[in-house]
Length: 233
Image (cartoon, rainbow, N blue to C red; front, top):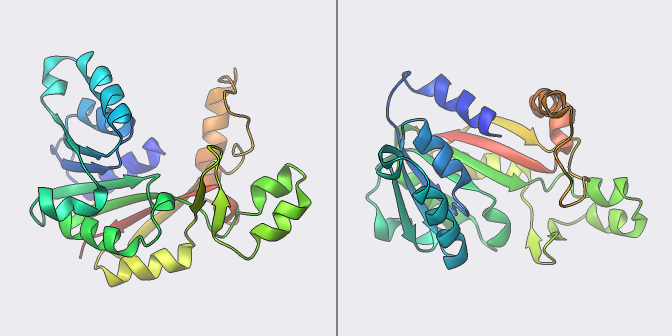
């Protein structure tokens, strides 16, 4: 999904512009570091001290010029208004966070307020319209039947979490003045791969297939994850 994000950034901002990026729920800092390496100024927000320690360890191995472009704030993504002024960022990322939040609308409204006019909001969520796909493809028929009528699921960590439907998020983004600009499917064909599966020899072909499917109907609609990009009006 890094390619998808890069595509949206390239389509919205002048080449070479150093963007102000906020990564809410930055985890181990994978996207934050990637964007810092590309020349952007990145602020990461993360609650989990273990994740922050890992991110700092990764950052310590980078050249000084990149280290200077990354700031890490320990905190809750719902408290962005405490830490930052409205309109302070050109790009706001919130990847893999919404599934852990019971009521995501206040969080999303807060993230939209962080965006400067024309800014990009990038969300990665579990696809609530396709929860039956994983149990169905693994032959769990009882689980498949149960998945059709819910947005609740148990993730691979054994946690009870929630998914989001495209139509609901489209309405939410319109309501917070960051209407949906583009959306992609992520993990269309690879969601059932076992944890710890090694990188296949034909990884470039796999990435090409996933990238194509993630942009193409009807495939993107049954992806495990949705990548939504809203633009601040």
